[in-house]
Amino acid sequence: MTAQMVLMTFGLGALFGGFGGLFGIGGGLIAIPVLGLIEGMDQQVAQGTALVMIVPNVMLGFWKYRQRVAVDMRMAAALAVSGVAFTYFAARIATSLNSGELRSAFAIFMIAMAIYLAVRLLVGTATGLSRSPLPWAWSLLVGATGGLLSGFFGVGGATIAPPALTTFFGVNQMAAQGLALALIAPGTVIALLTYANAGEVDWRTGIPLAIGGLIAVPGGVKAAHSLPEAALRLLFCGLLVATAALLLSHR
Image: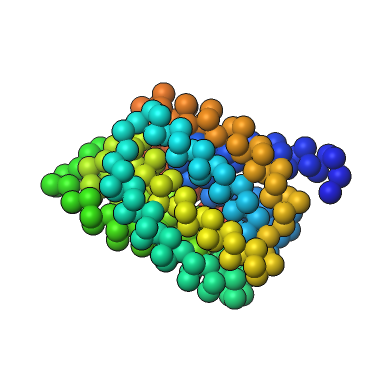
């Protein structure tokens, strides 16, 4: 890899890290389709390489969120334990799938999430909880679902967790994004090891991405703390739509 490519990859890592800190997603949501478009990686390698960046971004992001917002550690532990239990098995399956099929599944998942969030915004259910919040123990189900998605796609748990936590548990958006990082933190390590063992990681690209991401994550978290909650949710929905478009263009 030339010095120019290293610098470009570093810059992309900073961009992805900023988005990851802003939305509590580790940056992989954008990194995976971009790596496929720019680097020509197949879906498994793009997911595995993105995980090199996602792992440290998630750890730093969770720490920064905890400094700025109260996080229910019982719920965080439930999400993490159930998430990691399902991540490994899903990652093993993902590394054995046809790359095109996996990319198509990822695109369908992102489109479904974009539609779901758009509907929530339009009908006004995103403004608050309309029922009694579920007990924290039910978050085990959110963690299990998030773990499966993270294993299959390299990302996903941090995408589905915030709307689930705000809708069913009465958690505000900032706290939900911090909890989403708790969900995926241990699972991303397991997923990275699984993808690496299958030879689906480009370390030369992943390491500059990770360094750039670590520099930008705190700024993204700071920006998230300063934005109104409704605006943060609307931006998150827009990010999902943009990601789905990138995936469809690369099919």
